[in-house]
Image 1 (cartoon, rainbow, N blue to C red):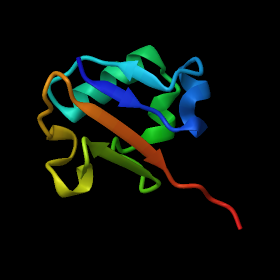
Image 2: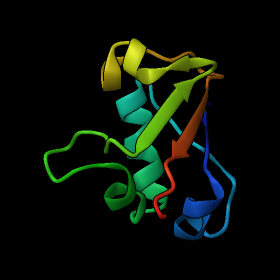
Image 3: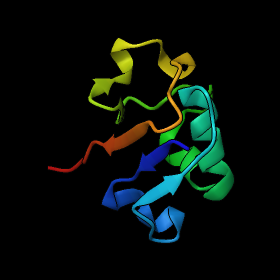
Length: 90
């Protein structure tokens, strides 16, 4: 099953887990499975329109999701998805 690696800033939404094992054949399905385990991730990752927030970067292996087919990107059963969030401040 694919694994979603969470940044420290979002682990509190997932019971302080650094990784979630998820089910899905696409990135979108895998993220929905993660949200099923940790519902607070939806607001942290997605806009109200259902798109990934600009402050969220997701890697499929070493590939940036923005350079692939977005949420429709097919993933292998042992995929590692790495979520990175931008830090704001100044």
